[in-house]
Image 1 (cartoon, rainbow, N blue to C red):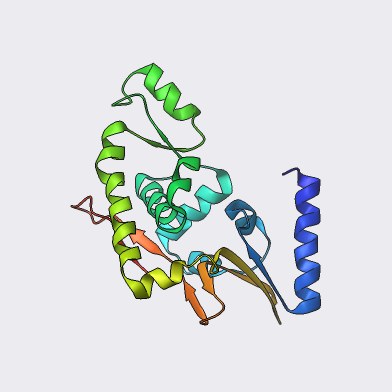
Image 2: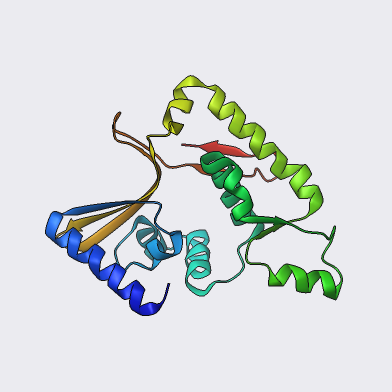
Length: 195
C-alpha cells in the first residue's frame, strides 16, 4: 500500500472511531494494524520492559528476521486459524541446510517463512495434527465456525486517545473472544497452544 493510500486509510479509521466510538475490522493486514498510531497492550508491555516483547516490536518496526520461535508461532497460528492458507506464508526449501552461499542466498531472498524439508515433514507436520485435535473437540470447534470473525482489529475511543486490540476469533453470537497463543517447548517439537 502506497503511503498516501495508507494515510487516507488511517485517517478514515480515526474519523470513524472518533465519530462512532468503536471500529471493528476483520482481516486487517497485521502490519497495518501495528503501524496504526494507537495505544495497544504490546505498547504497554514494551514500556514495562518485556525483552521478548521489545524484540518482537523491533522486528515489526524494522523488518528484522524473526526468530525460529516467532516463525513457529506464526505457522501454528496460521494452521490453526486458516488451515491450508499456510502456503501463503510458508515456502519449503529445496535445500536441507543453509551452509552454502547459494542456499543462504536463496533463503535470504524469500519473503515467506522458510521451512527445511525435514522441518515441514516433522515439526510443522505435527501442527496439522494439533489442529485436527482442536477441531475434534465440540466446544473448541464451535469457536471455529464460519460465522465467527477472524483476525479482528478493534479500535476504541478512549479519553487518552484511540486504543487498539487484535483478536484471532470474535464470536459475536456467544460473546466470546479467542486469542491463540502457541509455543514450542524447549526440549520438544510438539506444539502447545492456549486460548
